[in-house]
Length: 281
Image 1 (cartoon, rainbow, N blue to C red):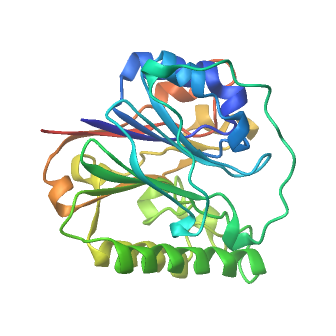
Image 2: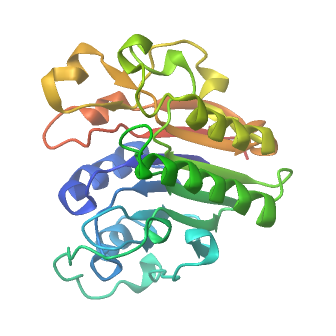
């Protein structure tokens, strides 16, 4: 079973790239972030044609998370159980083409943004998250980011079992260690690497999650995001902020893990690369 995560940075703009990647890498489950679509505009038909069901939680122009699965989607949860549930029909019941995207900016409180969706796919509960950026230290945005991670940790404690089959994947907007950035000195006093952010991710590990990518790649210099500006991708100036965290029972099944750097190349790429893990049956 292959589970992948990818911040697509606009599913409308990047849909051809996503379709191509699904055909090439054939994940059983793809967690997506920053879809930037309202639910009514989610591209159900293309995913159905590719053999996937799509569960989407969006708000329009900003944020948005989704799960595409070819091994079923059940028990969908959005925003830690406080959000609406939406699930597309399966590939066998394709409907009419979806209308053009509705991109109206939503007026929502930070805690109500479309940043979390979860479902059971192929016997594994998967969670697609898009953590807040935080912008700058000592700002309301940074405090909201830490509060959001507290909410995620509370949801895990209250509703999940660390002995169960669970994968939390997505854009965490946190580089857990210094080796997850190209030069730690360039990030001094910045978000994504601050001690409270790293402690928030460590809390998830303490609960019972394992960084599945690090099981197979302990080496530094492996990144999943590169700024569009100044040729940072080609210079290797990146960060590893996209992660797949698994409970120990799932981590024990993990036979491989990769960052697909090639997906960051070519025309109209996302600024993130997909990350995927392979699980033995």
